[in-house]
Image (tube, rainbow, N blue to C red; front, side, top):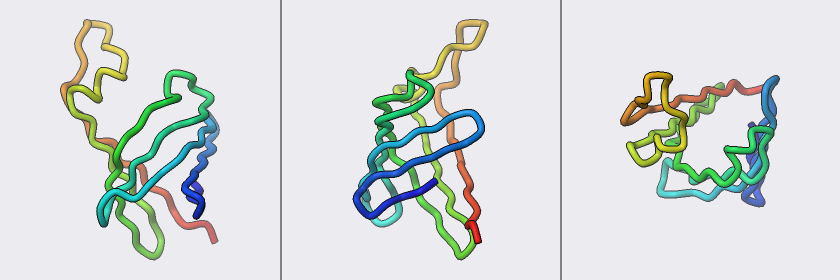
Length: 94
């Protein structure tokens, strides 16, 4: 994941490429918005991520409350969790 000084970010993986904007929220959080994505349903998503950084890793923790969970498809039995934390860990490239 690449965060640029102009307030934009981009991410590329084997299954998806996406990009968007970000801004600092408080001392340890970012608000990100997805502006482009190979997964079209993600475009427009805005979320706040808690940030943890050390010399080797960047960790972004996104908490979804009941309202945030509405963006996710229901399970085959028609239910969905009421909350979820997603932790994404990135390692520094040397």
